[in-house]
Length: 299
Image 1 (tube, rainbow, N blue to C red):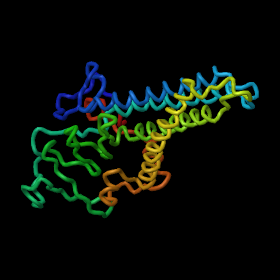
Image 2 (cartoon, one colour):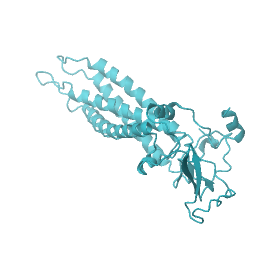
Image 3 (cartoon, helix red, strand yellow):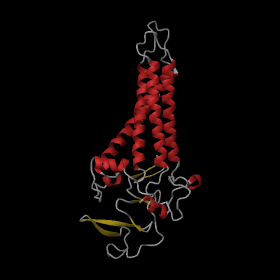
C-alpha cells in the first residue's frame, strides 16, 4: 500500500490517494463498494441459512445431525469469506505497478529513426539474442518497459499490465496480480461452500411422518434458495476466472498478451516456475517510494 511517506508529487494519473496518502485506489472507486456489498450479501445469506439449519429441529426421525453439520459448514465458509475480503482490500489498495512518468521526452528517443511522429514510436533492444521493441508513451513521456501498457482509465503506465477491473476500481498489474488471483480463489471457495449450505438446507427433511410440522415455508428455506442461486452463479464466474488465470500463469502470459495471441516477452519461465514466481516471488518496489528507499529495498 502507498503510505504518507511515499513520493507522489510526480504522478499525473487518475489514481486517488485517500487516508492522507496512505493508500492508493483507482478513479472508479464506486465499483469497489459494489463488490464489497456482494460479498456482504453472500456472508449474510450463508450465515443466516446455517443459523436456521442449527435452530430448526425438523422431524424427530431426521437421520442426519444438522446442528453439527451447520457448524461444520459455517466455519470454513466464514474463513474463506474473510480471506476473500482481505485479498480484496490488498488488490484494490495496492499500487498495481505504476511506472514513473516524466515531464519531458527522454533524449535520443528519435535516434532509431523508426516511425518518427507516430504515436507508436519504438526503440529496438536485444535481450539474449532476441529483438524486442520498447514503445514510447506519449502521455507519460517514457519508453515503456517490456510487458508494460498504458491504462486509459487510470491514465498511467502499468508494469506487466493484465487488465483494468471495474469490480476492483483499478488495474491489475505486476505488484497486485497475486492478490487478484488469491481473491478470485477464496471467493470461489466461499461461493461453493455457500451453495453447499443451501443444498443441504433444501434437501433436509421438512415434515414429520404425520405432516403436522412442516418447515417448507420457513425463512430457512428462503435463505437456502438464495444461497443456491447466488453461490451457484458466482462460483461459476469465479471458477472460470481461477481456471483462466491458472492457465495464464502456467504460460507466463497476461490477459492482454493472451488477447494479442501470445506476444513474446523476455521472461522465459513456463509451468510451475512461472506460477511460483508470480504467486510467491519478490515484488519490485513501488514507484511511489522515494528513490533512496528503492535502493535500500534492492540491497
